[in-house]
Length: 150
Image (cartoon, rainbow, N blue to C red; front, top):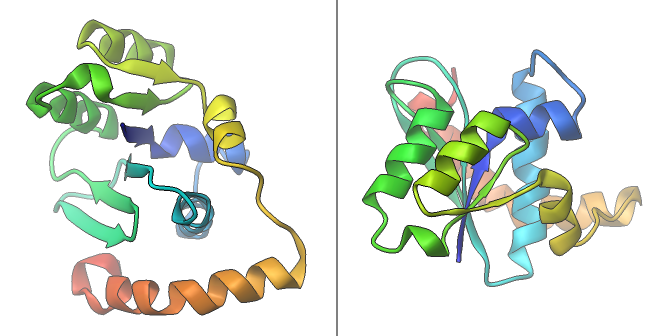
């Protein structure tokens, strides 16, 4: 089942930031990629952003910034293209996006439930060292792309 994540909504909940920074975005991406790495689950996280669509793949997690419209619009377009929208799960606390996703046939999962489903983030230097050793190659590829360095 593919997960479609409302990135800015998740940042507001997880990072407690109404105006997320690149650091907030990067931290959320790293956390979700680490959680998905030990599963077979695949997810795409959508962020609002400047014009010029950008897509990056980090293992089981794909990061998308749509070239037009909002992240919510991109999630709904993705559901419209899906052969089986009933198999998709939209992760958001946004009531309007949740309603529209259900109308399109998808399931909606609250962020807290998504994070419970995929475990907790391990704390301490052991977790940071483990994440760093795994993420270096993926992050290097991501930031080598000019479009991802804005």
